[in-house]
Image 1 (cartoon, rainbow, N blue to C red):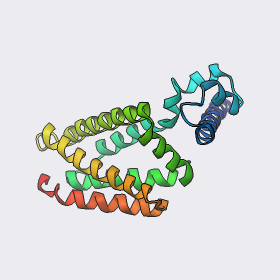
Image 2: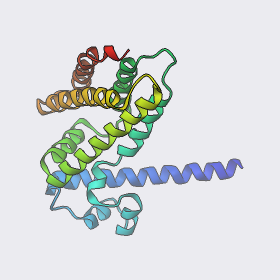
Image 3: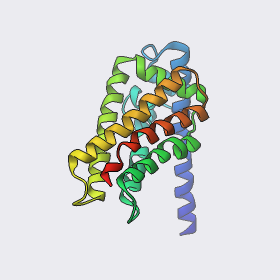
Image 4: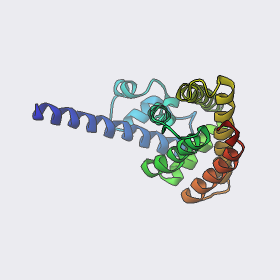
Length: 207
């Protein structure tokens, strides 16, 4: 049993290393050649894997830049579901922002330069802009549904949607503005948290 668990852990670590190698290779090539000029085959070759292996991890080239989206989404949904018995919606949403800004930042495996490259590509390449908008709307809808379920009979769908939209919109726009000014990771985090606090002040009426 212990041997089997060790083997599973070894395989998982190998998968994580391969996934990370593909992300690293893609970002290097995107920086050197440009996003549209980089091919899947080049990313795979740079990571020393086959194109077939690439498709075991990502469905498309753009997926590489959003490699952590679903994992982070699941963590946020779990956090909402575990809200404290006396925790208000506004306080829960602020804790959600702390998870996004601080804990995720501590675990972020991209450098500041890579993060800026990622953001620059997402904001300038049309297919990536479209994908980012889809993920943003999907994330907000799923969080709003989870928030509504966390406060049955207390928070309606419209209130939940408005609260999530106000808070995430303020944080994302503030963070993007900080990144565009060349701010450090700490400055970006502080700016995002300040924006969250300002937005949350208007959500206290939710109780």
